[in-house]
Image (cartoon, rainbow, N blue to C red; front, side, top):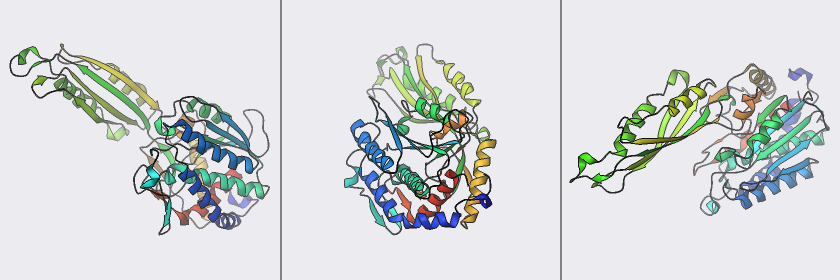
Length: 388
């Protein structure tokens, strides 16, 4: 159904229900945040996954854990009627439970409620979004309004590039008609486009020599790296949404030694899928200007861009209509950051992102969510899931 006039549950009723659940929602967010889950500590992520899995089971979800070795387990929970076949009216709710914060962060950055905000590591990115999804599912289950199958997928490695969860995400997305991503909002807006990301590592090998006695016998790896940095930085094309940024670099051993080694790490962002192969060819074609030096270049595009598609725009317009029923103006936005929604959009599955919490400070010490926006956004998410 494409309009709010077809709603089985009025949007205002969903909003009232979401407000009644606000306290228990905040308790769930706090429990998830206080179960620290950095991507690189499997046992910690698994504990957070187990907490979410127990909550999903309590709501009647059909839970499956995709066991992993090097990373935390991946949680798949299905709600509503069982559907078979690729043509089923099925929606994928996509999120992650890993964070960038190391174990022990809570000691100096506790989860606390202050001036209308819930602060703490992972509140915004994105444990509040996970709790919002579970709350929306709870509301619809209690109202007996889950007429379609909803697949909730919570991954454990999104912050490090989704090396193990990507194939699971892509397989499940292929079974669904739409994907709703629980990442934080862009301001108050939903996200209809994201840039793709790439990472390259460049190593330069030169020739060491005494900087005073044998200067001319040396070949400076740092000088060669400087040329490389100038070259790759010149590939930036702001009109195309293509940026190349050398974020970390190093080299050399002592000031009186011509450096034989240097290296750099490069971040690439692309707005258009076609720019991925082009930029990969450019990196593959890098050659040293000083023939006494050699380059080793590794890396590539690890997330394709989420381009603004007709299917995604249709989802956004439906959400905007429902938001208006709540008295809200819902804008759309694009961002240079990537999410697992990039993978699903690249498959051609309509993907709407930024459907999680409103706040600020993702990956920063002041990370927090704004409490007053939780209930309206849960009501909106529930409306979208119900097919209103």
